[in-house]
Amino acid sequence: MMGLSLAYRLATAGRRVTVYESAPRAGGLVSGADLATSVRWDRFYHVILASDAHTRLLLRDIGIEGEVSWTTTGTGVFAGGRLMPASTPLDLLRIPGLRPLDLARIAATLVRAGHDSPGRLVEWMTCEEWLTRWSGRRAWERFWRPLLRSKLGEDGPKASASFIVATLKRLGKARRAGLDRERFGWVRGGYERVADRLVEVLKRHGAPVRAGAPVSAVTPVDGGLAVRAIGTGTETYDRVVICAPGPAAARLCPAWGDDERRRLADPPWMGVVNVAVLMRSPLSGRYVTNLLDDGLPFTGVIEVTAVVDPAAVGGHHLVHLPRYVAAGDPLFDAPDAEVAGAFLAGLERVKPAFRRSDAVACRVFRARHVMPFPVLHRSHRVPPVATSVPGLFVLNGAQIDEGTANVDETVRLAGDFARSLLGGS
Ligand SMILES: Cc1cc2nc3c(=O)[nH]c(=O)nc-3n(C[C@H](O)[C@H](O)[C@H](O)COP(=O)(O)OP(=O)(O)OC[C@H]3O[C@@H](n4cnc5c(N)ncnc54)[C@H](O)[C@@H]3O)c2cc1C
Image 1 (cartoon, rainbow, N blue to C red):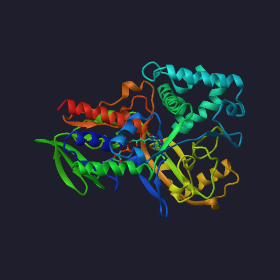
Image 2: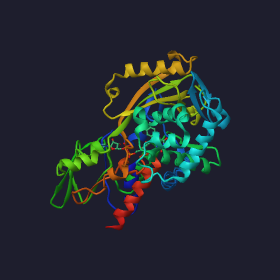
Image 3: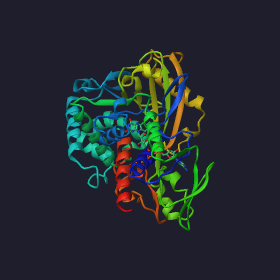
Image 4: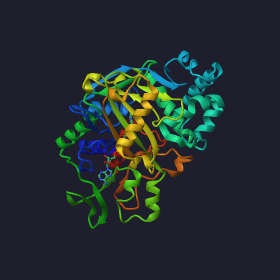
């Protein structure tokens, strides 16, 4: 989405642009896959929030805002061995181990997040320190710690408080934009439709998208920058913007020294292993179920068809089971059958009535580099967009200050950078 939306802004401003994509189809994290015969949907679950202004503007500009359907849904938790709703204060009171005082403090924490800035003021505290300060130890242990694990894996407590403040702010904004109930949008055809449409519009503006063309090197030469890609040979451009994740980008230019490569790959990136299960019956009817109990192989349960019409996925029910882990985690190399088996066993624990035989299809998807881990003092570790090679830039999720990876921030960053490139030329 970073590369495609940047290319779109540049091409529509009259610049000649070429996009290189290593996968056979453009889209990166938002691309789809065949989940079963005639069922193609997102490899990773994606919704649009009512407050995602940059995404919505882009969808309007490329003519597909009308293809978004909006709905409201509840949130749930798995706590004390039971699935239960967690959408209202009364629901939260039923969570084992949480008392009314904890609830009041959790509410005060949400208000506090609305007032705090995710930037320099809180980035030196860990999430554990910030959340314990405002919610107290018991609410941290019973409520916030498991929630953080769902987004950042086991290292969640050590993440910078900027992450939790930015995340709570984004959800708070969504709630306000949705008149107090979160409104979730989904694109008919899956989020891949957005990438496909961008490719179509780019082609119409004379900007080719070369899919299946992994770039192996970008080298300064007389008259510009030579881009070498597998399958398309070498071509020279005035400027090149690499929109790959930091660790992949850092390998691409032989003219960078070791220090610069290290800075581009920093902070350490984390990824996700995600099991998509197509089922015959619904799970809980709630989009997100946060896991407050320990010992499950995944870190959250996302029931996609609580938002998306089941007709869009062949009349089935689609559940995603993500586990966020460090980029070097051995889970990335575990055989699919082993991962799927462990995750389905976990699902049987979450919903005892579920049997593996209820799964119509089950597929494992992996993305090693989704976002940099939100380290302390993050603002000091954001790699600059301009590199030491004139005309060569690196733009990716590492430049999203608060470390909350989402399409809206991605599209915003691409738009800001397009303006600065256009203004400076
Ligand atoms: C499980 C999950 C759920 C999510 N849910 C949401 C959600 O509900 N809402 C939301 O807004 N966001 C969500 N996101 C976040 C969102 O997907 C990302 O923020 C966004 O897609 C990032 O886009 P990007 O272009 O920066 O990165 P990527 O999508 O990673 O794109 C990088 C691209 O670079 C390509 N590439 C890498 N190396 C090379 C090379 N050498 N040559 C050519 N191409 C190369 C890759 O193939 C890839 O296509 C979710 C992410 C995940 C993983």
